[in-house]
Image 1 (tube, rainbow, N blue to C red):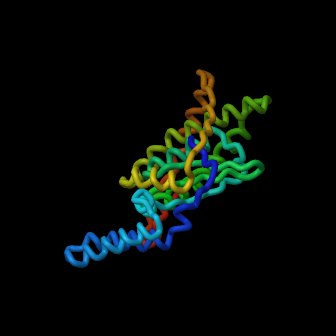
Image 2: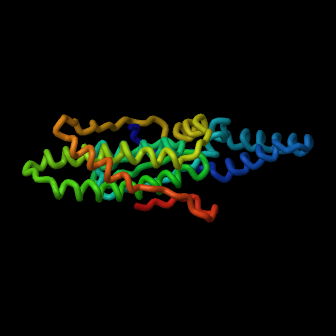
Image 3: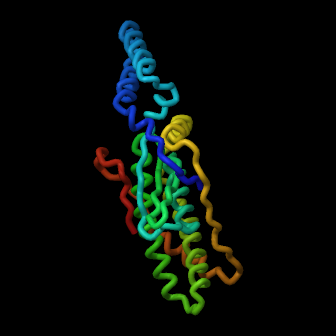
Length: 236
């Protein structure tokens, strides 16, 4: 998984100008040739005046939503896998920002309401999976803490495998890969890398896997009736 190393903030500094340029470009698509030409000239003039590049304009169409998850200073594999699963389902890219002694911040970057929906879904599913994992670990008849943790991670990985069907079925398809990549370059520049290994499984973990998959069977998403609220609802 990629990790955010710094924030350049170029898009934030030029937000008002970029909004004006985008508005002009939308007007430039008008069926009125005179109006379209005038809007295009205005957009080009603003870009020249404020030294705005085309890829910065492209990136302005992208949005971002951030979620901090308590207790995830050094997030395990299953938390990273959950963020990636949700991001992919909602046509976003997920990144993690880590600071010493602080909870990790998960950034979801995409088009339209995608990042907001992804961040909401990630937060709710994380709470559900964390609770299910903790409950499962507590009932294990195992003395060694490290083994309890490993088996709890196997359970979580199986939970994710089953829950992925629900999340993927709910997602909508969006375009915008080029714009998202432009946004990331402008806003964050060079990215670092952060990875964790999944818990190893063996023949003795069948119970953990089956329990994890069964625990995820009750997860469901449904869309709100009011279109002004873009967030899905999750229930069990």
